[in-house]
Image (cartoon, rainbow, N blue to C red; front, top):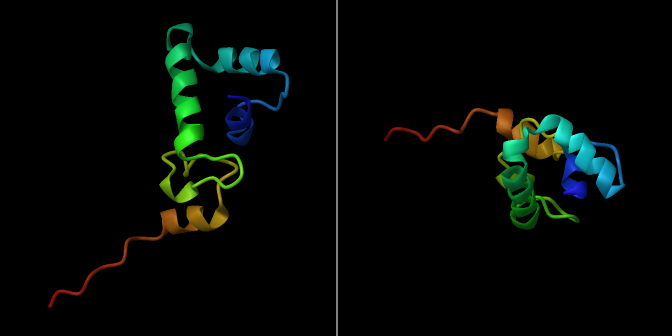
Length: 84
């Protein structure tokens, strides 16, 4: 939770209790459990600690820590295939 929360700029804290307090201010009480699980899964499946897979990330367009190359590719229109 802490690593991804900092990567997404949801907190600047390192102390888990302070991270929780920052996140509690952003997430409604009835959604906190689900949010926590989703963030943990995202970290395990896409946003790896050493080398995040920004090309697969659903948060790429809003992530302040995203790879600039991946963000640039997101903004490019898809290549057209020729009609032959």
